[in-house]
Length: 349
Image (cartoon, rainbow, N blue to C red; front, side, top):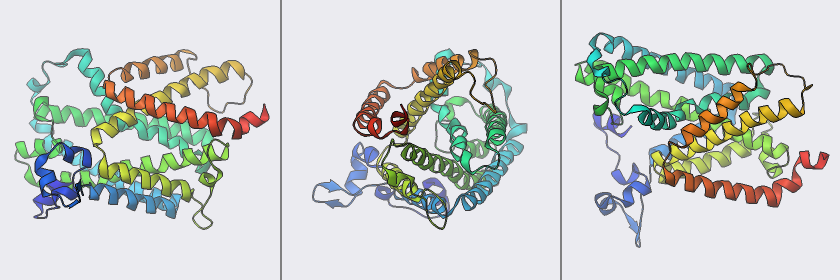
C-alpha cells in the first residue's frame, strides 16, 4: 500500500505506516516519530482505518456487505487474470528446477503460512442462518469455492515462479515485481492497484465471520448476552461486530503482521481439529441424528483432517505455540468461570 502511494507521488509518514513492534526494532523510525514523554507515537494508521471502514460496512447489513464483497472479488479475479495473461508467455521452465528446492520441510513451512489464505472458507459457515437453504448452499459454496480458488492459486503461483526464481520473490508486491521484470510496467501498475483493492475482500470475510461466532456463543450462553444483540434496523450482530472491529483495528495498528498471521493460522488449524473431532463424536454418539449433508468416507476424512492440521501446526514457530498456549489458557479460564455455568447445554443436562 505504501509503495503504491509512493508510486503516485504520495507519502505517509513512516511513523504512521509502521506497526509499533517493527518500529521498536528500528532506531531510525523511532527517531522520526513524535513522543509523549518517552513513549513513541507509532502505529499503522492505514491498516486500522481500513478495518474500521469494513466494520461500518458490516454493521449496515449482510446484503450491503455481500454486494461490496462481490465487487471486490470481481476486481481480484480481474487482477489475477490480467497477471496470468501478461506473464504467461514469459514463463521460463528452468525456474521450476529443482521443483522442491527445500524439500518437504519447505513445503510444510510454506503450507502452514499460506493456510491463512484458506481461512475464508471456514468463515462461510458462519453465515449459514442468512442463507435460504443452508443444508444445500453451505456444502456447495464451501467445496465449490475451495476447488475454484485452489486452481487459481496454482495457476498464479506457476506463472509467478515461472517468470522469476522463487528466491527473488520475498517482497511485499511479488506480482508487480514479476511484471516489471519482463517490461510490463503498465500491467504491473494495474495489478498493484487491483491487489490493494481486492485485499479488502479478504479482510471483509474475516470481519464477517468472527462476530457471528461470538453471536452464536452468546446465544448458547458461553459469552455475555449483549454479544447476541441484533441491530433493530440492519438486523446484524452490531455489538459483536463493533467490538471485533475495535480489537482487530488495535492489533492492525500496533502488531506485526507476520506474528498475527501465525497466531491466526495456529488458532484456525486447532479449530479445524476440533471440528473433525466433533464429527467423529457426533457420528458415534448421535448415529440417528438428521444429517442433510454427510461427510463421505467416514471416519477416514475427519481422521485425515486431524492429522493434516497437526502436521501443519508443527511447521509454525515455537513462539507461536507459546502465545497460542497462553491464549488458550485464558479462554479455558473464562469458560470455567463463566461459560460452563451459563451454557445452555449445561442447563439441559
